[in-house]
Length: 221
Image (cartoon, rainbow, N blue to C red; front, side, top):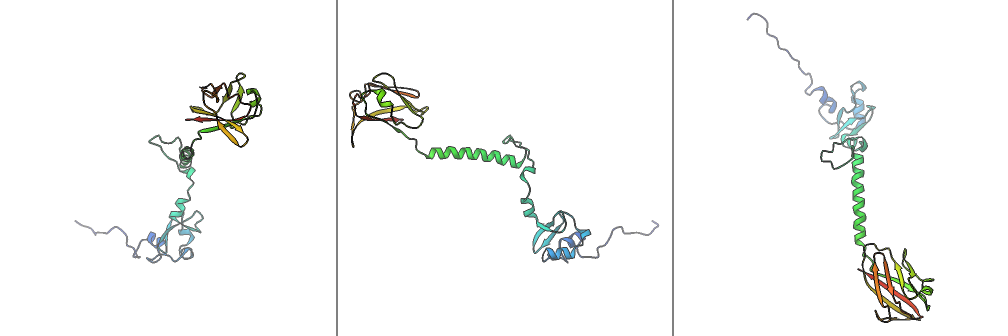
């Protein structure tokens, strides 16, 4: 073969490539940002160009005059700008911010349920009926739980309307109030002749005819 062999390629005068020389200063980390700016000319800087400052990896921000740690830069991303593809149909959201809001809505709803479970359900509800010879006279100044009402179903029957959806009446007790003393009346004798529960109403039939004030306790299961 006739000719002169040639080697094609290039040699580096530096022991490290230029990119390493930007990331490091003569093979060692930069002391601080001021050292970086004093060493790397503006023409050689670019957004996201990495530099090693005291062993921590930084990169240039948009203005090429300040440096940020990559970790802090990534954590500063706007969650609403980060799109997601929900392969598992878990979210309706199409970005991280909306997905987090969906998750928090579910968590808050569950927290409310748990908080409600931690509060024991009240079982005993009290009605105070003033002294009177008639049921109508008693209900005119009766004290009942919030949202409840009482009415005279007849001259002797007391109709109580409550707000406890789904709760069942377990017992009804009637006490005669005589000053500081209270006497428990006997059910189906002196207290009342019968109790009829129907949804949100309790009909106390033949309510104690005493002219004394009455305290009625209705217990729910």
